[in-house]
Length: 68
Image 1 (tube, rainbow, N blue to C red):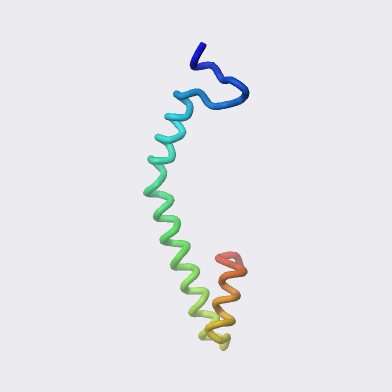
Image 2: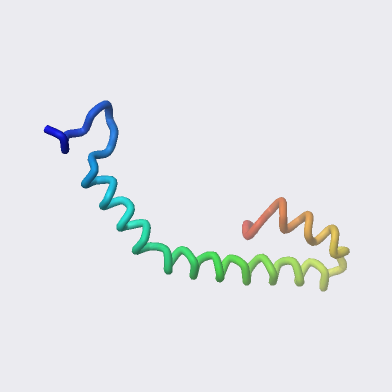
C-alpha cells in the first residue's frame, strides 16, 4: 500500500523515474540552450548592424528573446 498514490502525490517509484528522465534529458537541454544563445547573439548583432544602438538592441533582445 506504500506505493499507492496518496492525495495525488507521486509514489517513490514515480518520483525516481521522473528524476532519472530529467537527468537523461540534461545534455539535450544544454544543447538547446547553446543554440538559443547563438540565436540571441545573432539577433543582437543584427539589430546593431541595422542601426540600433547597443542599448536599444539589448532592450529588444531582452523583451522579445528569440521570438520573431
